[in-house]
Image (cartoon, rainbow, N blue to C red; front, side, top):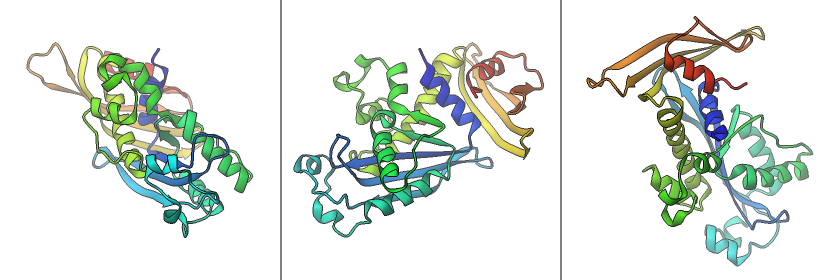
Length: 272
């Protein structure tokens, strides 16, 4: 099953902005609190044909309770570090504002762990729920497309998956450090999925151009240009597929596309 990888690939095609985040906490129970939040907004730049960091949030927060020694040994954050940091209510407002800048929320083990802390924080201080419409959890994808025996100690830890893809930036168990590793992993995982599963005959499949155009609720298009290389082409020539348009209202591609690359794209990328 490749549901998470397929959905992530679709998210990157459909949405121009991603919020990638991580938390450090006083522990792992429902009574524990967030003591550090790190996040970046990645927005698609159609001119440079890549995602770029357009905003970020990195802050400590005073949890209002002592930080256990066991937690400090993991994340290096002590009571003295958060003594004058923003209180939990201020943190809730900052995070809410941050997530409002993107359509997709991303993390590593975020669905099982970090989201719960954000949900309880929002409920406690804002009286609202935290329920992202679309999410990418890099851990779930890793478990679908990487065999356990390929990882150090057979573990899906963030550092091991980052090392597997050759994007290990270090600085683990720091919220912003984990964020940098996470978004690099997500892009690597989607490329891995495209290469080995969505487009098994093709190599170097990537988007050359992407732009979303909205005029009304009935006129909402995303335009794509693709570039790809056929594995069977010994010359390594890059082929181009230009001006593919997806209509978000009718959920159809225009013009009708017959070549295998576009058909595969239609199958995996558009999952609304």
